[in-house]
Image (cartoon, rainbow, N blue to C red; front, side, top):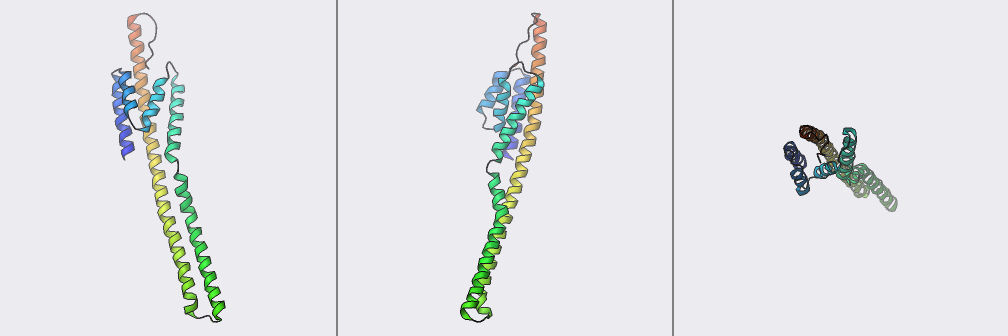
Length: 187
């Protein structure tokens, strides 16, 4: 919740600054922010006199890089969740092998002989399943959070671009009023 709420707050404050045509304040807000979205906005504000499609591409690339950073290490949680049942199964096989070895050593097949091996096998199975369940729940939660953050970033960037277009339009109108025919860069 913190990163998405922070992104919304940064977006609102940055857009307010842009609507007031205070580019320097918008840049300062982003420079002072610890939000990953701030770096995306700063990247967009570095570009001057760029076509809308190009600016959207710049923002999309920056969002993808940020999303990649958020997913860093997530693969490990997924791998643990996938491998843990196999580790448990391996422990089960080892426990059963020990049970059969104990039967062979004692020459009898009584319950007491195999009970410890079967117990070991069941503990390994339960441990592997417990680790897998916890890891997969955590992995799915993190995947969902990263997806939600990416969606907030996409919507925020759309609003940010719209505010930049507003600033560009206002700058163009001001230049036309001056009558010199030149366009003043918004950023």
